[in-house]
Image (tube, rainbow, N blue to C red):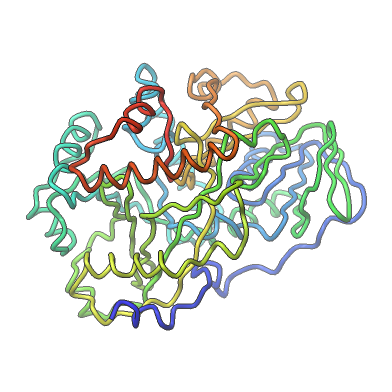
Length: 455
């Protein structure tokens, strides 16, 4: 039955098939000049261009995108819009304990501002402040969630009955519910809405205009060039134009399934009346949510890294992993046996060793970047855009005073050590999930030095 459920799943991204997708914009032709050039048309690049026009209306801004805006991670993620700037409260607390309160305050402020932007520009991306459930599926998860609940303001612990009352799954042993920090959105529609807001503010956007090289303050594509006073790099998982940054992130593939719409009876069988986003508490975790038309998006669990930091469209499909995800889905919701999946895809995430974004400048401060969001960047990219602009225009703000902004992660080692370390870490995480959360010597060593691998 599990294989039958996947039989008609199209190898396409559900979000990007939306009929509201805009027509592509013309490629860059010939030389142009600008005050600010933005490289990358995902969330970070779009937010940078939009925030630049909101903060400094007189700027002439050009954005260059190699494909079409929102076509990569920004248009194919799960649509979880979390207020955290640090890939979760626990990671922020462990790394920056003295400024965690300020990081939380700024994260919530940024999250509210994102929602306000969606409302102000009328972006139809089904923004819903649903909150998030982190569910315990193993006994040792309960202790971990209880400890997090004690530290995390606003979150509350649910016992087994309360968790299963929220969503009816026989696998749930309890849950942590945070009602106010997570919204759900339709990711591609958010990208397209930001794109339109940029255009309405006079940003010149050129799609199918991959930047092949950067020299000083000039960017070059196959058909044109941009000379700009300042440059913002927002290339996510793709190789940075600043070669020295290429060891600071690795591209990791995350695979996703989407079901057909659930019937009224099927919805009743699982509850889910509050429509929260859900993730389980394992190291290798699943995340899932309902869509506007009552499909279930189901992804995660097995991050995939390919030797040499390889990125290729062929890697977006892997039958064994998609089949495994389908099997896990029906273990979580056995009452939905017979439901079919309609879409299956993958996307590449930029992972850093500290699990959250880092920032910096080059070319005497005329170039700035934000990288390494590690799969929790839907909201954090707006914050990252403001940091980029703070750095480019020498603004002293609460953001630039953060140690989190001033610090850099440790780089990943070169190959073949990089692949060996990542695969050993993933194996160790899986072993920890199988053995009551016990972290082996390798994971404990990484913990000691503040290193790791996540998605």
